[in-house]
Image (cartoon, rainbow, N blue to C red; front, side, top):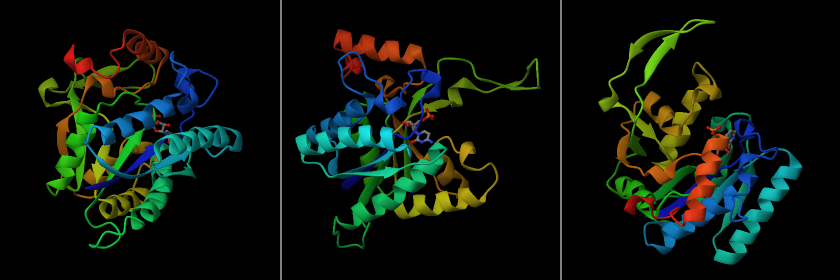
Amino acid sequence: MRTTVLIVAAGSGSRLQAGVPKALVTLSDGHTMLEHCLDSVVAARDAGAIDLHAIAVVVPGDPDTATSLETVCHAFAARTAVTVQTVPGGAERADSVRAGLAAVRTLAGSAGSAGGPFGRHALLVHDAARPFVPPAVFGAVVTALESGTAAVVPAVEVVDTIKTVAGAGPEEVTGTLQRTQLRAVQTPQGFDLTSLEAAHRLAEEGAGGAAALTDDAMAMEAAGHRVSVVTGDPLGFKITTQLDLMLANALLASGTSTNLEHH
Ligand code: C5P
């Protein structure tokens, strides 16, 4: 199935306190987070896990950062011969995804598939902040789309006990969720493009606004779609804090960033 990957890289990374937008943060091997993320997509292509058509990258709106990230994308495109389109993002992740969907629609149209502009074509929405996703995860997501599902997420089991809390000031526990029923959901998440566009339109009109939508499967759930789950990977972790960055650099130093599942 021809596959277009939408990478959202427009976050500020304020929780990382790196002084630069997260996708531009350099890991210990001298490569930026966005480079690692783009490389993981090509690794999935080279492993035969996905039939890559193009990549759209959503970059921050401010011109300096956008230029830096566009330079990364152009170098990657020149090195790999993959079509890469950049597009400015928005204030919240969901705003950035919506901005990216328009670019994806154009890119997918150029696939020229017989069943309409996006017939038999997979869309993967992926966080730039997840630099080490193994090819098998990309493959599992696309395989689920090929079987006809409109939405699929990779997930891993939760190790902590998750409680709900309430109260301004000192919080109190209001309940405990059954851990066996919980999953931590990663990206890439796979979708039928037309269904995801409609779901995001619906979510935009709904309560909570863009900030309430922390992933794209949420929009599909709200629109009444079934969302399939495939096995994620610990290496699909998202770099959010300094501790995550230290873990990423330790993985690079030990050479296990691409094969943790074997350890
Ligand atoms: O903020 P969070 O860690 O959930 O961000 C996940 C991904 O969404 C990151 O790759 C980040 O660059 C992206 N993002 C975005 N636009 C925003 C906020 C986050 O593209 N406004």
